[in-house]
Image (cartoon, rainbow, N blue to C red; front, side, top):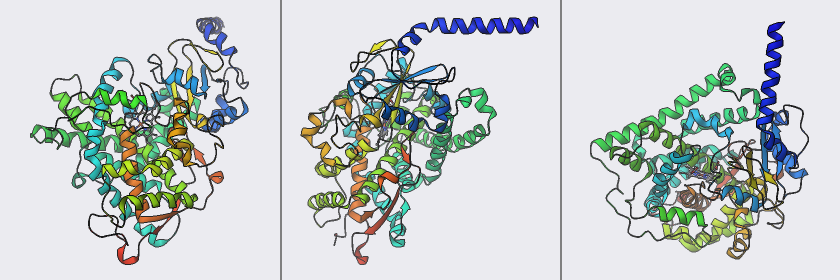
Length: 535
Ligand code: HEM
């Protein structure tokens, strides 16, 4: 009895102290609008259903331009969807730390760029950003082309069968293999298929997604007791197995004195080559490169570690794991959504193909970097796809200090998790007239110029924006134009019947179903090459 009494008293005192130490958080939270939750657990039970759907559902009930709070147990979440509030969070050089949910990625990426913070993040960002500079990317064009032709060939059996199929696996495998060849410098000959890795990543995302929605699995201890931990260990074996092999082989090459083709090729000009619509965060990255040598990602990490930079083997492994994930799953989803949209909107597809015909005439030569600059309409369709279906639909940041949101003047308390509702701001009727409609003209230069910069943030924005943005856009232009030059894409499931799932990367749970029809006659159905002309 004495023990129980003491235990109860200690718990009550502990709880009182906990509440007292967070009194400012509670005071400020009380002033932020939000749906009523249950005592103690808040909205935790709703998230079991799905975080993405829950947040979206509540966001639809409340005015678009006010921050919205949710409690999940003791954690205060505030969703921001107004571009001015998004700028206050993402554009700040103070709120750079990722929210606690990203910790579930630690067994996978460790302290990689996506989740690291402070000086570690700053130093690695400075080192890595130049490896995605346009002058490096231009040297990847040939590899982007070769891999795009490869995927066109692989999909030929689906076109032959004339049925609908899920294009996502093809896009995933292709994007993994492209990353291995470009950023990692692993030649096709040395590669195994990227499919095993891509499938392991998909299943790993399912586990992370599930963990986000089951609050009792948040503590590592309880998660380790669950059956999912064993499966996670198996999947990480596959994922880390690939990255380990890649690093070992590159290191062995380096020690033998073999250097990549870019190594002795100094940058000619550091002038930003960003397109007109390019955003300030890209320009900042461009300037970062200075007069350093052009090196592809893994080459640079290994050279730097061997040349005295404070970069351990573990650091390299974590960054490789981060880039392999960020660089493949996002673009696989983006390209799959794009092809579904082309299938659903044949008139728009016709315009894209018309533009490609103007660029390539009846030649089936591979695309050059200059060609990609002329793919203006295709780029607008790509941006419109990323508007409606941003592969990263929500970003979480931990607020470092109290901050006033410009939309309503609401003061968000330090320590809360801010959820930036990318999916939601992209469908704000105040910004995009008829926001649910697929309209590539939303990305006409004059419309972009008249919009708030933070109302279109598929790659995030500000100091922690995506380092791979230009890589992604260049690769997607080459991949998608090669597919559209080879096949007419069809789709039958309308957008309203798609089942979206989006707690890590936004995807269609019902599969990215499309059909393909060769654009050329049977005698001439080879994918674009340098030789045979298009009929
Ligand atoms: C359509 C393709 C892509 C989209 C939509 C996308 C989107 C994003 C977004 C929204 C973030 C911020 C995430 C956050 O704050 O939680 C991000 C960060 C990042 N992305 Fe991408 N990304 C894409 C492609 C790529 C590619 C191709 C690479 C590399 C090859 C890449 C590498 C990264 C890295 C390393 C970060 C972390 C940056 C930092 O925190 O400093 N991404 N990306």
